Amino acid sequence: MLLSEAFDRGRVTALRHVVASRAGESGLGGDRLADFVVAVNELLTNAVRHGGGTGHVAVWCTEDRVICEVTDHGAGLGAIRPDKPAPDEPGGWGLYLVRELTDTFEIKTGPEGTAVRISSRTGNEKI
Image 1 (tube, rainbow, N blue to C red):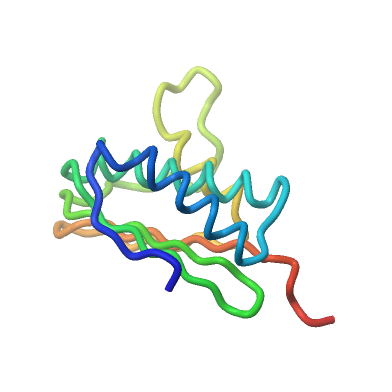
Image 2 (image 1 turned 180 degrees about the horizontal axis):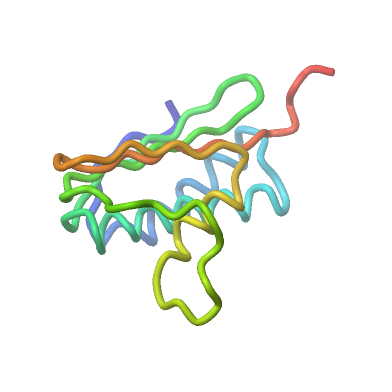
């Protein structure tokens, strides 16, 4: 486990830096690291804005991936659109970006909250 912490709005920036450091130490680098950090930041921000103001973030690694799960205790999400939002649409871009910037994206949502799990390959996989 690289990180396991409850958070609120005041911890988002600090957690973004911790995630960048720990994911980098685990083998993510360059654009893949930058993309992963942006995706995690989107998830943290969504939990604060739409998930009741607080959440929990966990980051861990396997042999060839860095994985992050962000959970909240909000009322859950409505329909999750699988396609790209229209350019003039004001919302819906966060989860779209998360899907585009990571290798895997899983979401579970319901009246007790939402959990989003993402992962990115480190480049450490065996050939």
